[in-house]
Each structure stands twice: as structure tokens, then as C-alpha cells.
Amino acid sequence: MCAIFGILGEYNNKEARYALGRLAHRGPDFCGIEERGDLFFAHQRLSITDTHHRSHQPLKHEKILLSFNGEIYNHKALREELDFNFQTQSDSEIIIAAYLKWGDDFLSHLRGMFAIALLDGKRLLLARDRLGKKPLFFMQDAKAFYFASEIKALTPFLQHKELNIDAMCSFLSYLAPTAPHTFYKGIEKLAPSEMLIFEDGTVKRKKYYDILDTKPNQIYSKEQALKLLEEELEASIAMRLESDVDMAALLSGGIDSATISYYAKRFGKKIPTYTLGFENFGKYDERDNAAATAKLLGVQNSAIELSRNGYIDTIDAVFATLDEPLNDPAAIPLYHLFSKIKADGYRVVLSGEGNDELFLGYRQYFEYLEMEKAKAVFHKNWFKKYLRSNFSMNREWEWYKRAFEGEVVFRTSSEKFTDMQKNLLLKKNVRDGEGFLYLKALRDRFETSDHTDESIWFSYADLMHFQAEHFLAKLDRVSMAHSIESRTPFLDHKFVERVFSIAPHLRYESAKPKGLFKELMQNKLPSEILARKKKGFSNPYGEYLYSSGRVDLITEVNKKTGMFKEDELAYYIKRAEKGRFKQHVWGLYALSHWIDKELL
Image (cartoon, rainbow, N blue to C red):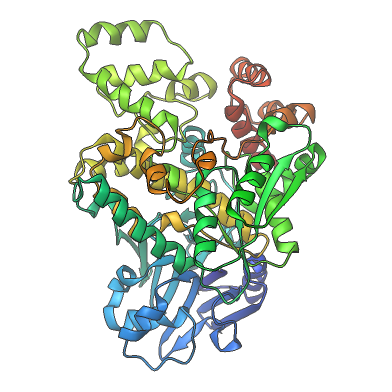
């Protein structure tokens, strides 16, 4: 893993080096800079593949410069088919060779995670990997075009910091700003599967890939589906076990992390695992389940305990790491977990993101499938009028309202504040349906694809936003804050394509979350693991937020901004203390914290 950074146009050398230095945590091993009058092209390196100095970046070949963050797992196979005089054993040089052979289409030949900046003369190409594992941000002003792996390297070039209302509204709706928005007006991010060309002062963006291009219903046989899924999963995990440095894995009590540990051991890799628990909060604790899993699989497991003070005292550091509001309180315990992993000397970590979205691992997916049937109910207009006259804050009210009005019911698993709730809370008018506009491009692509099963929409929407801009954003920032590369085998695009190619009903016909995947692992993982109830990375953030008094920041900031209606804000804060709307309030706290630090 690394950091990429660059400026095309006028710049101040001191300011450019300061901005680059803000990314040093992503690549502490070497800082490379290519500099000339109208160009500052740089790279901070975390050495993982071919750690020799010959692979330092930016890489140069004739008029081409490359700064690359990520891993290309098929680089050895590509090396065999590329006619190029290689000078290194790195996967980075493969990118230049592939570009010379295939032009911009070289991206379709890469299997891995990446953020790429490739300068060919005066033409700059930026690209983010298919599923958004690696971030890439950019901005343009009258003087120059800037790009970076994290927002913190771009904010020094803003004339002034201004809130992007679209980012805030999509954050309230979906836990994280939807692409291309960031909270800083003027700074944007590439979406997953997106490339950008900057040439002659003009920016052009386009999608170079879409999971939905996978032909649906290629496989109807469950037996064949399981066989092909297993082959792709094995290939994905095997690729991600290759490293020139030591690696570890995260382990909960669930099936996903257990699967990774199972295959790692099967492939002859003794990978230690790490788990976190909470002092005096057994209901959130995964340590016993993780220890049981480790014992059943015969792998080493280390557990750390996070105290109330440890959690609270880290909030500011974690929020600074994230750069902008992200409504995921699990970022704080994850930060502590990676701190321990770094202290033990590991530079690569395997993690189980993505499998819930691929195999319908959330119970609510099945509730949404049932809700789709409400669209065909008799006397729909009567129900529609009744609901409009009897508003409720319950999510079921919103679901039925959408179903009876013929709207898209599912709007990612990350949906939190509905438009009705935002309209009641904000001192601005929020029209019903406004929040869906942030997902409309995704829905349009689904509706024009060959896929028709709504469960595919569930997976697609969640992969493109809930995973890419929420879970993967958290994983990238928190792991890279500790100079650790995170690898996510379930999000290999070949594995994802295989899932999208099978008949969708195979994923939900059992009416059990992750039913098909559990069948795949039935003769591999012990039944105790397969039958264990899903717990997730839960944590006592609500209890800590109130007991520490930090929740008061929300009302303090609101007194200065007047952004929210006082009575409605008080309603949420009061209800969250009793257990309802907890994540709503955490999101308001994260937002208030950012406003306090950046705008006030």
C-alpha cells in the first residue's frame, strides 16, 4: 500500500511537500518525487511486493510516470504475456507495460485493488479499482489540477473550507457521502470502476467496468454453482496470500473470517489472527466466539480488550484519520486492533468484507424481498392515502409507503435518515424522494442491464456504496493510518462476477442469510461455526457517547450553526439514550465534530 499525490500546473514547492507529508503514514518506507516547473508527481511507499529500492516510485519509462497504490495479484501471469524489458519484480511495472500494450484498456486486464495515476506526456490518467477498495480524490482550481490518496493532502490548496450540502445530505441518508461528493466543496472522489482523463485543462470521467455487465442466469444448478464459486474463492484467497512481508488476519466469531483462516491454513500459511473485545460489555464481545473458532481451526489468536476510556480517548484521532464524517462507530475499535497488529510487526491483514452483500447475509434483505410483494396488493391507493395521513418514524412505514407508491423500496443497507426524517430535522426543505437521487445513477444502470431480480439490485447498490464508500473507506483509512495493507478476498472481481452469474434464487431460496455460502463451506468449517448467530462488529458506542458527555457537542454546535430544529434534535438525542436511533445520533455527532473542527 502507498500514497499517490500530484499537481499539474502552478504550485509552491513548500506547500506541495507539506501536503505530501500529510500522507507519510500510508508509505513510510520511501518518498519519491518527480518535479519540474509545472509538475509535482509523488509517491509514498509501503513496501509489500519486491521490497528492493529498484521498485521505488514514481516509476519512469520514457515519457511515462506512474504512481500506484494497491496490489495487482495477477502480475506474474501478466508478466508472461507482456513484451517488455522489465527492470523489477514489482507489480507496479506491470501497469506501465500493460498500458503500452493495451492503452486505457489495460485496466480490464488487472486483477486486484488499485488507485492509479499514470502521466503520459501531458495526459494524466487516474483510475480507481472496480469495487472501490482504494481511494482517489481530486480537485481543480484556476492554477492547477491536484490528486491524492486522502482528502487531507488536498485541503491545504482550498482557498477556504466550505460544506458540500450534497455530501451532508447523502451522508445523513446513507452513512457516507455518495460519489463523487466529499464534505469539502471543491474536492471530489472517483467512484468505483471509474477513470478520469485530465488533458489540456479538461477533465473527462467515465466508467471502465460494471459488475452488471456480467450475464445473468448462466448457472441454474446449485451443484454447479457451488463448484464454480469454490474454484473462484480458492483462487482469490490463494492470490492474496502471496506477500514478501508477514501477514495476519482479523477473526470474529463469524463465518467470513473463519473461511479466510480455513483456506490460509489449507494452503500452508500459518497466519495469526486478531480479535477485539470490550471491558464490561459482554453482549458486544466476540472474544469467546473467536477463541472457539481459532481452536476449532487450529490457528493462533490474539485478543485485546478496549476500555471505555480507551475508546473515548481515541475518537478525535480516528475522526482525524477519516478526514470527513463517516457514520461507523466501529472505526474506533478497529483503530485499536490495527494498532496492536502494527506493534506485533505485521504489514498485511486479511479481512472478510463483502461476503454479506454477495450472499445476502443481512436479515433485512429478506424483509425487503417480502416488501416487494406489497407493490401488487389490491386497493393500493387506499393504503397509500392512509399512510400519508398517518406518518410514523418506523422504517416499516417508509417501506410500505414506497411500495404502495411504486417506488424503489431498497436504498442500500446503509440507509439511516429517510427524507421525511431529514425534512423534520433540518431547517431546510427536503422533498420526498430527494435522497434517492444520490443512488439514481446506480438504479438506472441496474434497470438498463439484463438483470431483473431485485436481490441483484440489493447486492449491487450495497457493493457500490455501502461497501465502497463506507466499509472499505473505513478499512483503508484505519489500516493505512498504521501503515498496514488490508486485503479483502471476497471482493475479488472474478468471484463477484461468478456470484452475479448464478440464478439469483439460489442465494435466497433457503430463506436464511448466507444460506448458499454456508452450503459451500458445509464440509469445511465445523457446524458450530456455521450455526453461530451473526453478531457483527458491534460496540458500546452509544453507552460511551452518553456517559462521556460527548453527545452534548451536537447541541453545542447546533447553537452556532442553526442547522437543525432544536425540538427534533432533542427528540433524537433523548430516544437514542434509551437505545433507539443510536446510529442516527452517532452520525449527528460525527457531523458536529467535523463542523466544529473544520468550519467553526
